[in-house]
Length: 239
Ligand SMILES: Nc1ncnc2c1ncn2[C@@H]1O[C@H](COP(=O)(O)OP(=O)(O)O)[C@@H](O)[C@H]1O
Ligand SMILES: [Mg+2]
Image 1 (cartoon, rainbow, N blue to C red):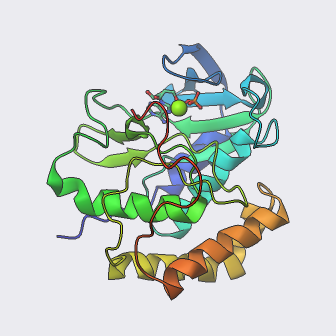
Image 2 (image 1 turned 90 degrees about the horizontal axis):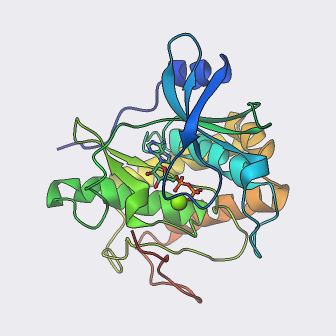
């Protein structure tokens, strides 16, 4: 069964760029200021994380998390996957921030209690996390919507140049990266040589774009899910 979701609709991404944001309140469980909002006349539910509301971190430059979230969407789309909801960088009531499509989901489900039918999707998300060097893949950052489709959220601490993969998705160590994922990574590498590199270059510094390319190429050269690197391999809390 091909579980690869359709690439994210460009219409939704374009829609995010226009329209007023009407803030409804803060979402529970956020460490940064994460607002639930309605967008434009249609009232599309979105998440808005203003740069100004980002909590300081010792290892990521202040005020860059929203850009990393937008870059994660660009990378996921260039892989041909739509796990990351459409996400853009734009102005809002509290200044520039990331705006992302809100996904209706059942909060009882997360990466650690999904049924085995989701295994192929979780493997693809694990490949995505290797590429973006995700330092915070908590179980609760994978959402299951009403049509049983998985989404991946919260990519503020990705793209560091140093290895920082911190994830709950370690089930695949030593397993080959599936062929369809390798094709997706090849497509990403091509895109990073072409049109996608300028979009990413507006969001990440050049050294992080270089590391991103290197991580993608490493998967193609050594197509096996790796062991954890140095440092703490699990996020806290795990959900
Ligand atoms: N796109 C989204 N769709 C649905 N719920 C979301 C989305 N983004 C965030 N959330 C909800 O808000 C919570 C906090 O968001 P998160 O991205 O984890 O913020 P933080 O950067 O503060 O960790 C998430 O655990 C989730 O429940
Ligand atoms: Mg979070």
